[in-house]
Image: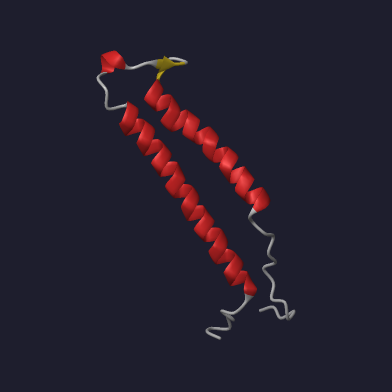
Length: 94
């Protein structure tokens, strides 16, 4: 026990798992954005195709990526995150 914190508390395991899921979501978001922005955006401007007035690379990387990430975050929060109480289970409060 360090500074009154029990590191064997199961809430730490849940918090670490959820933090790892958050990091994975950030990596997915970056790879999606980078792949479309630099993959499709590296062509010459004359060869760009457009979606709703935006270059396709921008639409897929920014607009599509935003929509994908909103759906992924909702899914992850609904099915993988747990509601964890902040109070000590022993009933002690400082």
